[in-house]
Length: 591
Image (cartoon, rainbow, N blue to C red; front, side, top):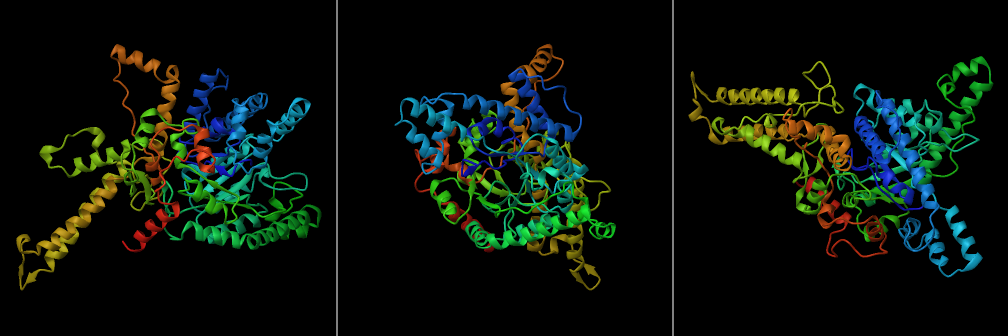
């Protein structure tokens, strides 16, 4: 990789086509594979926009994921080849490729020295520099815990079947069954003939989790290309507070134990490789003894020659923060939130981007928006958050003041089922933001409240007489009402994030591809045969850093800001990522 900075996965749509936008410029980024239907929408929209024949829409989840990744790989290759064919003239895309590199990068030093050369020496130097250009890597993220209807398995299969030579990022927990699925694909193994063409990245928030997962994969002969450390609290979206460790402390532990982790997993891979060779070449008894190893999809497996990469991310949006983390010995950092205001890098509609430009640090809060019951760092001013607040007001309004609007009914229609899971009381998987679940949960809360009030009344006997409601301690009643009203608000606050985290991308596709999305609709609206389309709610989940950026930025502006080679884009009094993280952890420890 030519850059120390990569763009991590954000939401569902926000980095869905980021490799198409920036990979040819050497920047690595991550696509979410959660919503295969949305990826198909992107593929068809690009086909129309670029005049490509990408075939008919795919009808399976694996087919949609594979086809989209194949398109991305082809488009990155095409754009990169075109970039390499450009001239060095100080203003070309080829010049931009090198201008965005840090000043101490070997390629940047060679590029800066190019202008002192003339004649044949200049031509030779340009040719040599062009040969050293490489595109950014295409990476794809799977939330391994979301495996309803084998969604995570299909994502692995789609990635494995694609032509992408990049990395699969495994996030949101541990799912050993997903590891077993990965072990079936030969492209993830290192052999004597070649390095793995598809690599594994584990996104973790502590060393223990990395060790457990790394050892399990090593037992299957699989190496971890990179351990991607993410702050459990100072990140957008789902926040994992369990470890309650500061990012810098976790990074130091990883760096200190890097060699130990490498030697441990390397020995396990070597043992697996030996068992595969014995099973392939030895006796039937040996093969039977090594039955699990004999199922490896390739022969000639070898352990990696060097330790895994270590990167860190979460709240790093200033050159000082990045330099602090890099100085600890990591190989790179991930920067997400600031790129939400870079149209060259991320996918969202204009209205959502204007909303982000107006956001302040106080507009970011830890919410109950996720149906997974995991704390969710959310934007208070998003249209989805506003809709949920309106639902709460409607629910608690007196009967005479309720509007009766259908969109304000508790819960949301479950259209995509990505977050469905087994929930007590249901005989089928259900999403905890769905209308079906929310209505039943509210009824359960009503019953729990009645039962507790009844127990309070029963405890207020004087002889044979039961104290009436008016005679029951008022403070206790108010306390019970407040407790159960808080549970109702928490239930009503959940957003349909598997749909809403992709809606900003859908809106952008409609803006850029009107013939694909608007024309039939506008004709029908003009004829009166259907109502005008209502814009769907948008969930967006940056961290508080978004409050320190207040306009749209070019890709070069942002990269130069992050490397400290250009104009600073954040105010000098902005607290560091580590101060913000320490404050959040302090509030968690002392609520």
